[in-house]
Amino acid sequence: MQASVHRFDPATGAGSVLLDDGREVPFDAEVFDASGLRHVRPGQRLSITTDGERLTRLWIVGIGEGEPIR
Image (cartoon, rainbow, N blue to C red; front, side, top):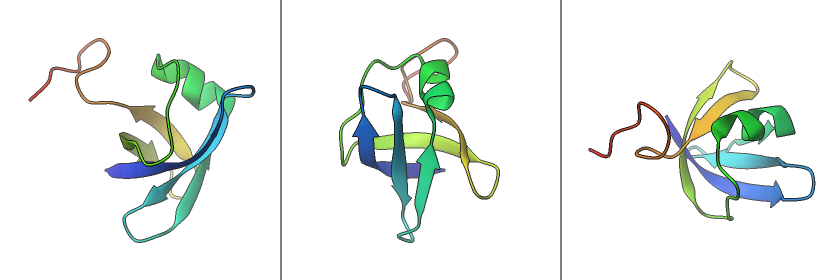
């Protein structure tokens, strides 16, 4: 699934994304730290996994181990 970054606080590493249906889904610093990313910006598209209510993984396709650009 993909979403757009809505908010991101570089001081804490927490933020939220907007799903294509307009729902806002938060993520915490642990999820961001596990992504291997250093920064994201509002509007940036990310690939995500959720558990239904919370974001559990975020990444950019083509960045990181096992993520080939297609």
